[in-house]
Image (tube, rainbow, N blue to C red):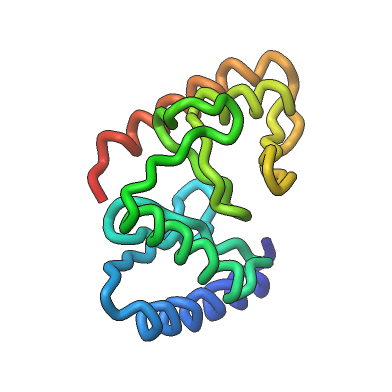
Length: 153
């Protein structure tokens, strides 16, 4: 992302933040920047998060927020869309907000040789990498997931 695109994205995120805070008065939101991707993430009720992708519309973002809030209020414990088991170490697609286990996420990473493709919406993130780098990156992913688990929002 160029500096100009980043500044445009940042301004857009500020507008989205103000709309969300205005429209969802009874919900707790935190807005943080992911240090690895520089994407702004919305943390809902200190429990779940979604990402604001540069090409997400406000309608997309509100749909993701509504889905997460509904699941929280209804006590819905989603099953992984890949292994169909109870989700272990939740990872969320930043495009469609569907959830899967961290190990399923890692399997997507392995299969895609560095590219992760959401099994639901087909959104892709990452880049092809040499085979020798895959195990190193998998360890990095596992480390980040464990670090995220130890941090309380």
